[in-house]
Image (tube, rainbow, N blue to C red; front, side, top):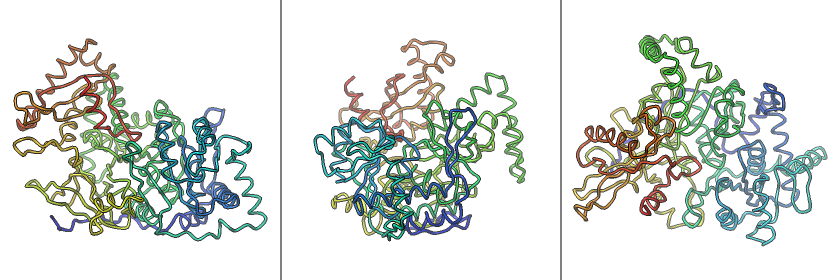
Length: 581
């Protein structure tokens, strides 16, 4: 076991420390009350409705007051919906004095939603109209402990279905009459008030118990290395139930008085960035990679590829002398992105180095971060004084890290310790003991630190393909090489029994191509021809690697890989699909 201490990120900015969301809310109310918290579209183009933090917090306090008044003090309360204002309002109304929040994955099938309602023992749930039928079933069949159903869309309470809007109005009246049950409520910073389920089938998913101190510690770390402020507008795109979006894209902006706008869907991202004048975006790498690809394709179609390449060389040269002319040189590209974008932060999956380098060269600060639900979530991130393409930056200021049982290349399992580490897997002592050992959380990720203490993630421990000769093959490493093949959208590398040696495995890849790109790049739509052309490119990649890593077999398709809602490939599901072929 390596016990060497690794250097953590320098704190670049002064930041306020909060023990819980109540303290954060009170500070935001005091410091940013007159700042705009949300921008909403109206029926008129380019006309937006804005909501100030003072109004937002007044509604949170009203909703919390009414939740307590109907009997929900210290209860578990679920939330399930698309990203929207009501989700965030409900989250803070629950956690700032009412009870424990249980955010549910909005993309789960009905059976899994019902299973998690039972497992969590929630007694109330906020939901949008999309889930009306499921909630009707839960109510009719009297499933679990769920008694209170709160609709985000109903304008009025109908029978036993509460209206969130009406609860807010009820709370406003109670506050006017002197009710202080919510505003005076004490919040325990160190007990579970956030219950999150890991991705996976309900029988396998674990309930991660997080405290408010866990998440507030992470918000503090983020605030010391990133400078997002009241002048910024962020686009909320990733599902809010996921800790990456919840902590980095919702609670962190809330703590610094930034504005939020909600994305209308993946097809509307480009338009929404322009319409809302987005300056900061936090998302998964695949979104930024697709965005970059489209920008580059547009440049090539205009015949400006050489000019762009020269501009990038010039801007990178000037940057060495501290002269930043990127926004001026690439003003045309900035305008296609609305003219305001200054910061992209990618997390939840590996980021293509060429894209990170490319956006930075164009004058959009682009960084990669890394974390887990179990660590609230961010463990490490790049920032303006901590960039090494391919790495995930350095460990956050509040944390310690070490590599367990490193091999000759220094690769081993990453373990971390600090205030952001979860309390436990709820009611799962065995899984908790396997994951937290002597205060160290075992991440399940294989990683190494370079000589400058930059962290590099090489893959998931459970994904490693171990060959007969004892060599380890990391699928993610090969997948990053396959991503460079023209027209390849994504890939999945796996091990399969070798017909020539039944005791060994051969390396195989399932490769997903972009139908439109293929026509342009390979001048064919015939799948056999496409496979042949991609296979030639794979052979070139093989020459770059040692022979034991050679890809021996490929499947080529235009069907996307099976993924979680945060775009992580469900590897076991993919293997099942491949085995059925």
